Image 1 (tube, rainbow, N blue to C red):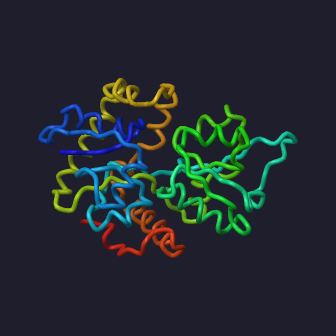
Image 2: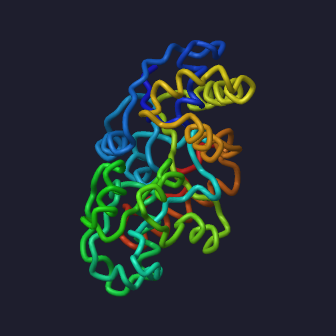
Image 3: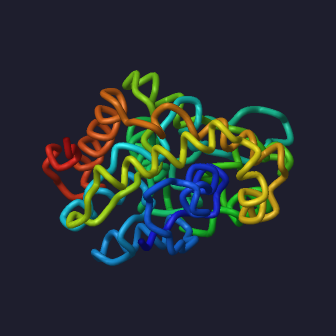
Length: 282
């Protein structure tokens, strides 16, 4: 079976057991390690492997060809994207209104982080940002540090490393979302082509995750091999933050969070309108 997921620690941790033949009865995996921008592009065009990790922001485009699986993805609390700015010489904190008409770097225009940013900006930045610049996420903090960008939207391990760039956090979009809705943040979704047995695939994913939790050291070498020179402690923090009960089962709050985010985004014209019933495959 062909699958695509990112080289990030949360994905390699979850899928280590399946990828290494440790899940009884599961088919052998042919893994493509792909940044989520790539898999999002596949989702937008109805392309891609049989199973893949995409951003929930790309899900409305994918739904005609793929179904959302109830496990294996990334939702959570306290794990949202951050809006960062350069620390000021006078140590005065910049306010959201200061970003009006400014250049803001984002890692993707097809990401949950971007949807959250746009929903937040609509309520907090008068007249909106002047220019949204898409760039690889690892280039965003250096660009803000150098003053090439006025602010940056960051994700993943940047939550733990931004102070080393002399940056400060303007807002935690995850905290904003949780305060607004009381719901977890939908980040990464696992989807499978509609002609497949999604119940079986879900069971294999859950078995792989259960193995990872029962044998946390087994995946260490695999995780670090693909962690893009990430410090081992950061990788561990990354897994603890993004692999949780929602990874095992979306549950009522998970599905409600997904529907709420995408419905709000559709009302702002950020994603296509969709039938919420297609999110569930009970």
